[in-house]
Length: 485
Image (cartoon, rainbow, N blue to C red):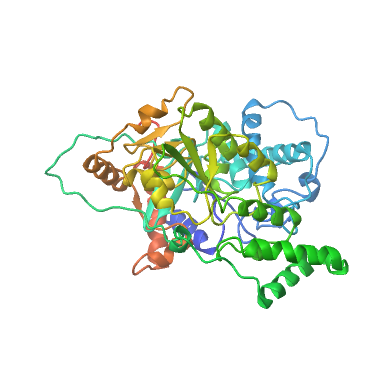
């Protein structure tokens, strides 16, 4: 067995070491990670060419190579758009010291050069398996995954959404694919399994005090401008205009909607000015409506799991065409979102739809979910929360709770009234949730969850994860999700 790992950071390096120690028949290991790994992939997304223990994955010339007449590769071409979307988040247009790629052709050449180098490495090293510690969504890891799939190399993917619990699968599209036995056994004890949404702030769900613009806020703004748009400081008229616009935004939105913390740009200010337009909207919660809470972008939930609905405006446009007469779509922006992936054109497309309404930032998402006929999402946890409240969920991508009763996958022939009429049996739902959780694995692979697990020990956890990977690769354990399920 010869294994390639995509594992970044010291804590995941422990998982690699523990896996290698546990598997007796391993005779080759290839580690993609940081400079302490065989090949450094962490900086490639920003054109940082860093050397690993076995040299450079790509040289700078290969990264910026242009005008290469690549032979047609239908498999790679099919996955290029996803790669491009993932890489775009590290463009110089959006982040400081981002990559210098500009034209689509530049992206494509980088994609093909990277794919060719990885395919060569897999072949030379005779790799038999590739292991990921999250669903590939950061461009480079996606190429590692895509090339392995092209070559028919099994790809073991671990993913964590719940403290202490790990999901596993062999293909991204299998995420959530689980055969649920809905036969109700009343005598069976019902366990209480749930997801700890520790990243959700309760203050976002209640009418909030408006923000303030005092001397401290002015100083913060000026510092931001000095770092990001210093020329404005030399133009008093323009600077005063920016200050006035900023004051208007800060005092119109909830106090927690703080745009000064983001890198200052005209696009950023225009985005938050647009949000102010929605604060006076008053949704009728007694009407027939579908609730669409927008995803934070860019994120894995859309970039890897959304397919064409990585464009959330397309999701809303699609729903709008299917909406029964007299129904509405209520859209709520993600409380962490900035102007990235929210150009003014995004709002123009949605505002052209007469049956769609953006709701104020601090409208209670729980109340919206409870009173909606349907909650629609690409792959977000909002669908999970909806079915627990008894509201059917419509998903447009793939997600871990896709097999739960009350969850429906979008297709061109869906009947929204039929979906809205579905009644979720709480006992069957709880039984289904128990089955889902029973197929998860013990352990933690994402450090954000470490502090949310009682009596957590890094060394013990690393050994647990290493053994898990060994058992999954050898067939001693079955993955949580699979095509055959």
